[in-house]
Length: 221
Image (cartoon, rainbow, N blue to C red; front, side):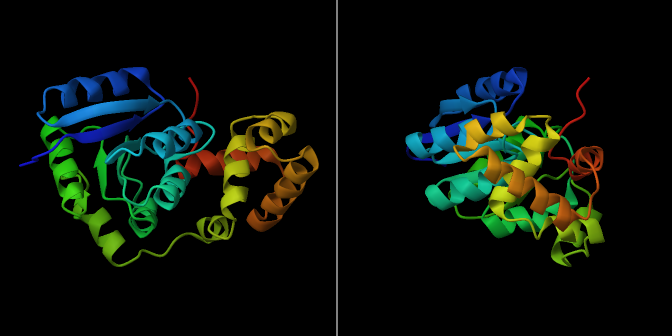
């Protein structure tokens, strides 16, 4: 039982998802939504300002995916608990996210009860996995399943290179990325060159396909 008001922040690029979550949480005593964001970069900025107790975070968001946003939020607001909400059971991310300090991983097909349970667990310092996630995924996490060679290469990218990698995959220009990250176009070009070299890729098409495979960029329909 929660004996105080718990503040919750919603980070998802789909308005209807945020609205649904807000409606769910409105019906819970002592839970209050204090802010929303439609991309990862906005989420980090607002969470740093608002310092909520809980963040419900999507993985596939523009400008900065939920994994990198979680990394930054846990750094600037270590007291804030992050619960991941995703369309897919990205088992390759579970160990990394929990290593970053995420408090839960839920599929969006989970029930409202599951989300409330995850929030309560996070507040007690516990972790929560969606019951919908298969036993295989849990076993993969526990045994730290071996990643594919290309995914291992991705892990060699620096945090900044991962940010640039995502925005390149989203089709953003060097100038646009430069303005978003407040660094020079020449630095962006250097990052891009390093990214291509580290991932052993020859063209942007390969990079985009890999970003979709990782689940940090969605296929636009």
